[in-house]
Image 1 (spheres, one colour):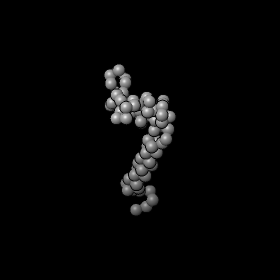
Image 2 (spheres, one colour):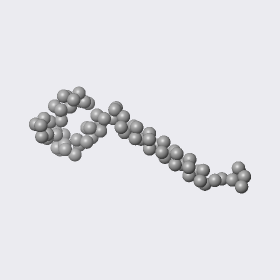
Image 3 (cartoon, one colour):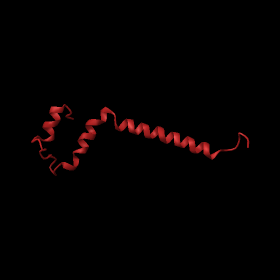
Length: 74
């Protein structure tokens, strides 16, 4: 076996390294601080009514009031 033969295990290792780098990149993108407000807004989508309003939470505030207090209004 010389250096001119193709080693399938080398290809598998290269694909594995590329997948790990891709996973780390997606993880970093998803957890970046720039995405936090968007993900917070998307997490409230199941709670929205058909007219786009969100019912009051247990503290008696709706999400718009809470967002202004947190400084995360979009």
